[in-house]
Amino acid sequence: MPADRSRFAPRRALIAALIAVVGSVLLAASGSADPIDGWSGQANGTQRISTSTTQHLVGVAHFMFSRGKSRPLPTTVWYPANGTPRHGTGPRVINDARPAAGRYPLIVWSHGFFSFPEQQQTITALFAANGFVVVAPLYPYTKKGTKHFNRNDVPNQSLDASFAISKMLEAGNPLSVHIDPTRMAAAGHSGGGTTTNGLFTKHRDPRLKAAIVVSGRPLGAYTGTPVPMLFIHGDKDPVVAYSQGRQAYGAVPWPKAFLTMLKTEHGAALGEPDRGHTQVVLTMLDFLRWALDHDSAARDRLPDDATASGVSKFESVGITPEPARAAAQGR
Image (cartoon, rainbow, N blue to C red; front, top):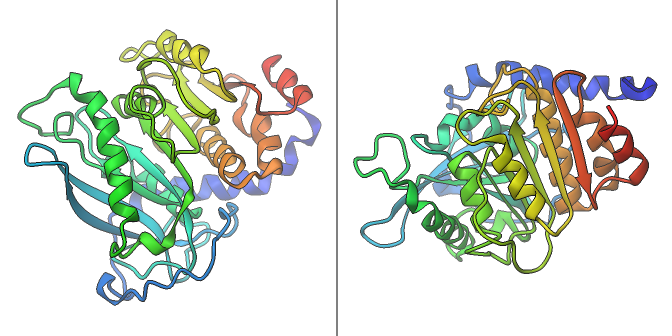
């Protein structure tokens, strides 16, 4: 561990405290915030992504979208809300809370097979607490409880994700004035990671400026304007082989990074209290702050924040400064 690694200790401690209790508070989504019908719709300027020391209260809202009778897309949205956050105790989540003033970057989050958006609230609420609007559609043929499961529907899910973004940006959507359409990214886990790959391959959405693929499979050739991509994968994944994640990473011709979670299976340490969860959280936040806000300090933190001896290994091409990248890859 480098001698100057201790300078990240306060921020690491804060993140650790936040993720340690998030699971216990997310379902207590009640409070006295103003209801969704009372939103004023005032954007009041573009907001940079928060640092981990200035978290937001989190609101959660539900929308019913549809891409035709056979493709209902109920969508859960977490967003920065007006109010005082609980520093060090995990995001406070309130149903239909008044949004915080400003325009925030958007992440479209895609769930995996036999899953649903709320199952990964540990991550989605954390993103919202740090200044993102997180849009998470429920996919009709891979969701938990579907009567017509179809793994081959994944390419259609990429189109669903793009559709959900468009619906969120429509005039009249109460959150549209709080989204910055110039700063949008896609992320997802497992089948959702493959869905995310599809947004940059078969069904490229040019509005998206960054991607995070967790435990996903390749889905065609990457096309269009280069955007940075982050891959996260457990090297002992029994569901989506680590080699498939490496294959996708190798095919990306753009700036890219790969976080290997050592001795880790399919969950890739997304869940609290998984070993390596802190490294995953910090890496994702650093990556997005750099990719969407051009935060060079966040980029420079990536090798240290991502790497823990015996836990995780980080590498990149075209992202981190050469000396830092070489040091991280040599650990």
